[in-house]
Amino acid sequence: MPGQRKRKRRREAGARAALRAGAGAGAGEWRVVFETQDVAQWHAHLHRLRAGRERIDWSMTRIDTFCGRLVHPTTYRLSLFVPDSARDPDREHPGS
Image (cartoon, rainbow, N blue to C red; front, side, top):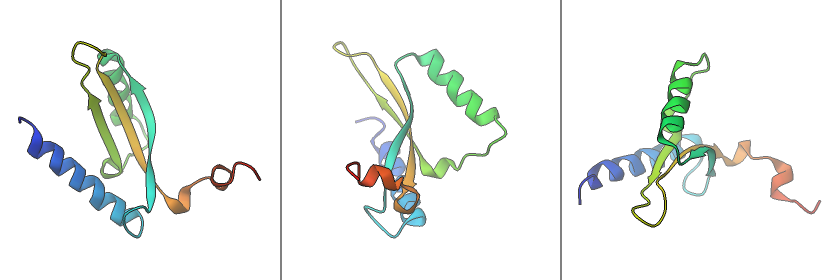
């Protein structure tokens, strides 16, 4: 299937980034930063991120494209890996 090698490399790069950020698998989570079904809006958002003053560690990001085919529209998603130590403590225990 076309593109399999590229997807595998991206998954492996994401795993390496997770290992660098934490202490192994399960050391954090992927948080969705931006999601859209409009390709022009997707490109504009990425352009703003690349041109912005704040530098982004792209090895800690994941870009997903969910192909909708005929049933669902294509969805573009940008996620950021957040290590366990950076998680919000209120989110861990919502009842307290």
